[in-house]
Image 1 (cartoon, one colour):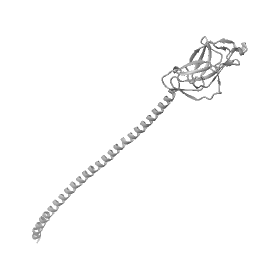
Image 2 (cartoon, rainbow, N blue to C red):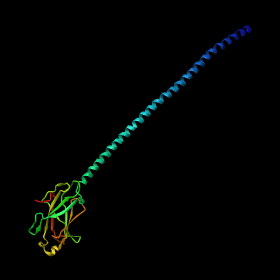
Image 3 (cartoon, rainbow, N blue to C red):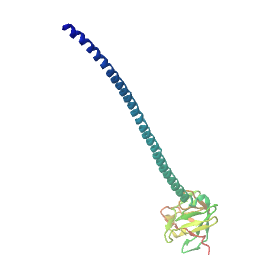
Length: 237
């Protein structure tokens, strides 16, 4: 009995191993296929992420020049505006008559009376372009290259206006020069003038007029001259 059991048990064991082998083979094949699928999926995931990142980078890069262009455009506009403003200011400043483009002369004006003379100071545009004058010239008597007494005081009986002088045009200002003999000699210190020095409005360069018609007061506190604002024309009737 014991011998039969041993013989019958051996074939059964042999059949079990044979049956298990195909199952293991199929399982290994399934595992290998899964591994391949997993690798492919992993590669596909990486590949899929890369275009997304590339697109994002491209979009970011394309947005950046747009911001730069906007900034450059704004800067360009500001520069153009500043340049135009500076040009306008320069044009306005250059329209003022420079002393170098004017000549200065004295005419008889309103003559004299009551101890004073009333000559006209005439400024003429000797340049090649239009220019403007406004307000009061500076005027003083001189002798031997030195100022005699005080400069002319302003007479506000004429309202200042901007006067455009075309080449050859003139503007005039009435002066009043008091005769030195009208003052006490000690208060005046009479001195013969040989020149009237004229500063056109807003200019630091002067124009000399040679004359021997006037005697000034060397005492600076004695007012001997007044000057009106410039008016159009040379004042001739």
